[in-house]
Image (cartoon, rainbow over all chains, first blue to last red; front, side):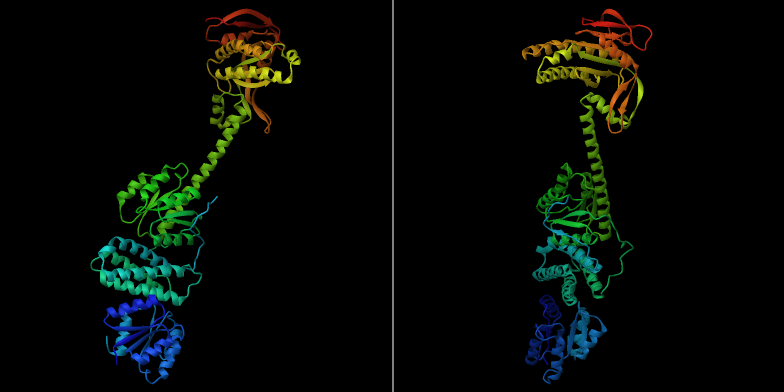
Length: 123
Length: 487
């Protein structure tokens, strides 16, 4: 398993921030801008964990999540959903799509790191 | 009327929640702390700051929208929070002020995360409501301007912003500004200079100026208050305090505007009174009337005055032989000269009836020498006839002579007439007596009644004494000729 984190985020301001923050935390990050690209990267790069925004262009996060779960080559890769809503319905929708965990924006970074650690056993 | 302005933010937007204010306020504060430090910070930190400010700009743009998309909003907030937290990690130890501002910023993002307003910091989150005003916010930093505009437009104020002194003065020139919010530290024209220009300007002087100081610079504030500033705020300012001061400023301006309107009305009234009475009364008397508000009330008082009546001998038959234009030239020349002399002696011209003049000395203002001035006035009037006749001869007009009668007695002086049409006038028996004396006065002659002679304090040459029978008086009236002579 590669130590890389795949960040899937179309908002470049937030994406740049997370890349910078994760890098500062000693993690190796690569990024994708939409759901389709995310699936391609997951297949090619086999990241340790995926941080996935749900509102994505081309293919949204829920669809990408579902397809990842159906593809044996990547179904094992943990996915943490990033969404703008803190409601139970959202949480359920993300988990239902096959996400392993969930973080609400604006992201609580230490909390996110704990989730990453929990899912990958690395930091 | 409001003028045309370039950047006007209007309208209350009650849906904007408190956290966005807190956040943008913290951001503005942060930017101000950051700018002077910028060159001392390393590239990474500068980079983070520029991202942070970009996030702030995006947030601002989103908040301008009617109902911003929550997803977009949270992405921006997430970025702001992320960069803010990184900056805190890097800067906390060295820059306590920046750290404090960042902490406030982060608190605001957390408040946004929880989706509602944070707990009020104190009980001062009262809602200050005031009459909407036209506010000019002057600050070189765009963020500060926008922040103030947002706060104040939410309360229904119209906010115009200016990025510098020159722009502020231009706006003042174009619009009727109620309150100026003035940042003291600006690059092109210092806030103090803007303040000085406002307070020197005859029309802007009354516009309340609230100065905003970046630091707790009490000395600078005192200097500004001495220079005419009306109020002050320290940054970062409490939004409720800002509202309260704006409210006080608007009230002050409104009060001044009402006073100014009242003053203009008074001025118009005064102009009207001067125009109406000024033709008959000396300036002094008009001033006296204006200074005593009861002066214009209908009614009157009994006072002892010296009455003067004069007319041109044989004028009626004279005028029949002249062209109308010649009559007017002749009479205006005569009355013009007489009016000047009577006014110079503080006489009140009651009216002209054709060529006849009725003037009074001693009303509306009484003086000890009323009778003396009347006699001196009469002498001067007779002396002036020489010059009038010289001019008449030049113009081919006939020479004229006037007779002047003086009488002293108690008359009722006041505004006589109806509410719609009244004039300062006099009634009483002495008026009729004067008219009777005038009837017997010859051209070039001055006749004064006994009563006037007794009132005189100075020495004058008197000529012959005559006795008149006046209707309504049993005894004969004694009149005296006044002659021109060296006293």
